[in-house]
Image (cartoon, rainbow, N blue to C red; front, side, top):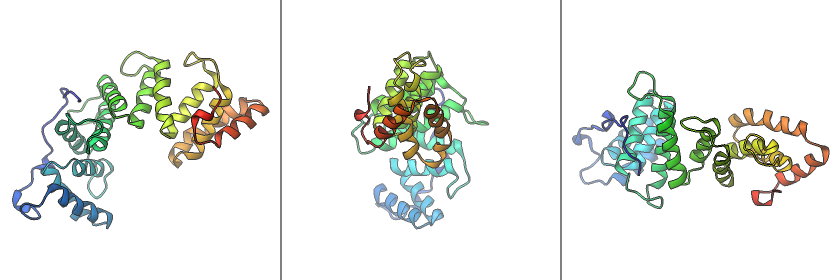
Length: 262
């Protein structure tokens, strides 16, 4: 459960729809959501938004999540982070008693992470002020309760930097490791870089394992993440011995971090 903080707002204005616009009286929110999502995939954004708003008005978490994503990205609508924030907030408010195995768990976890990002940075010109303490709590909830890899990575970063509370490099490394085991490339890259010399996280240096993780992360990361991972990998590669490079490159071809030396 996520406790409602002082930043919790009232429901989104976009959900205040005239019931007369409903697709058909008695149509379930699930069916309306399916119609909206099908329209979205066809590229019919206006029709998709209308249906998704109706499904959201009826309480469908998936519709609210999709609308939140669309407002956050300016996808078919004018970009509006505050509108997206309210969508994600409503998901968390309505589903706060859901368990990690509930049908809506993925939507709730993603919404909590989105709220964490917004509260971490704030939304200029709105009541949502930057609150890294609250953001860290939200990331912690998504990381521990839902096992969300992105939340685990961001929580690790905050613990590493002492953002939103005391720094704890060792705990940061544990969260990064959990995310890396899920195949989250950014976590594997950062953890590999930390393990390469071990100094930051006060552990014995593991240069082969660190270089292997950096190399594998660089291989599987999306293009936008390769931009910051590549310099880290190249730095570690340049500081390694020829034997360590060969061994690390061989380990980088494995899919299981359990195969890496420790």
